[in-house]
Amino acid sequence: MKCINCGTDNNLKDRTAKQGSCVKCGHRFAFEPTNMGNVKITDPMFMKAIADISANNTLFFTPKQLFYLLDNRIKAKSASKFGLLFLYLFFNIWAPGFIGGFASFLFGSNSFLIVSILLNICFILYLYKKSLSNKTNIKSRQEYARCLQIIGCIILAGGIYASLMLYNSFVLFVIAVILGMLSIYFGTIQLRRTKFTQEFLFSQNDFQGWLIRWRQINGSILKILPSPNQENTPVTVNPDVTAYSFDRLVVCDSASIAQLLIANNFHFENNCAILSISGYPQSIFDTTMQMLRRNPDLKVYAVHDCNPRGIGLVHRLKTNASWFLDSEIVIIDIGLTPRQIIATKRGMFIQSSPESAQAAKQLPEEVRQSLSAEELTWLESGNFVEIESFTPQRIIKVLQKGIAGSRNLESDDSRLLFVGDTGNDIYTVQSFG
Image 1 (cartoon, rainbow, N blue to C red):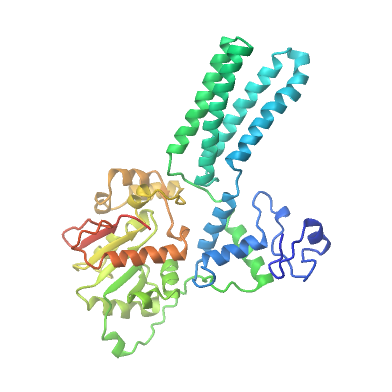
Image 2: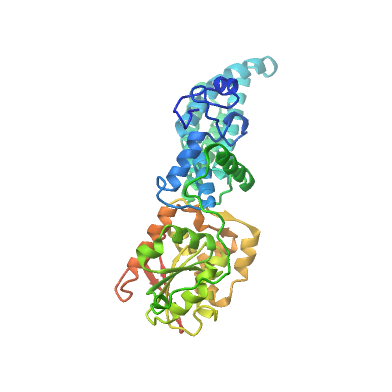
């Protein structure tokens, strides 16, 4: 493992001899991958994750965004299909010869064939199980699925040849065809699936421990955001400022995303106000709302998780007296929405829980009517996606595109779908990025 301070490569013997420090400069390592079990983090890997999530220390980010990025990086380090195929071919030569040789003393010459069949069954089941694993990312699952297809073709070709030319056995022919077709079938159905639910490889407690360890050794992380400040003390605003208003308002369903946008100066660069549905930032919430209600041409942009609470954000904005009840403002739903996730070809980190499924079934009827049958089925299955699974750069880019695409709502803009009702004009962005 390379030292992030001087770049010296330290092997395990070096790190052990120096009690976890670099042999050249003495800088301590925050992580020892050989003691971390299945999840292995190195100092260069953690440092690169911080640099990537912050776009080389130019953007603020939340701890949860780093959590998602690390999980994805670790999952990406899985075996390639070429490595898997090499192992498959190696064991198909070694196992029948070695294990079959010992078994032949008990079961005769057929032992070689029996071992080969059992090995192929085990390999197919292993690859299929890995392609279904919630702790494997989409790219790796597809690699396992492709291996199943290739191995199925090998079994068909090799098995049929052996059954007809070497053994002259109809039973072996049937076994080869069944195993080969099953392997191809399993691989094909997995490749056709584009929406998988996932689980994290490590816990939030583990991650918090890593953050503490990193800070103890390497100091504070420049662009990581703390928990949003819930200070309720009003801030005195100059009357000259409150005489103005904003043309745009971004409303987030979480204070964390509102804090993220504000910290990255999104409000300055895009001339808009930013608030969370919970009232963050509390110190200026009331004053900001007074200014916003003064503008009859205000456009509101909703940014939220794709879960029952997030899906209900637009409904709360137009039915809550604290927001825009009995107002004719335009609301643009940036996302995330089930429609966007179902339509996208990119891999999103989809999670599932019984609590989310139950909450989806309790959505207000007006919200349910705005969703298609496919979207309702997706939500009621317990599926959800958190917006913090995306990088700050992508969230900002999508929001900027949504604002740009809504400047002329009367134009034929394919990115916006009109879903208005009697009280408000509601639009939704059809693609999240």
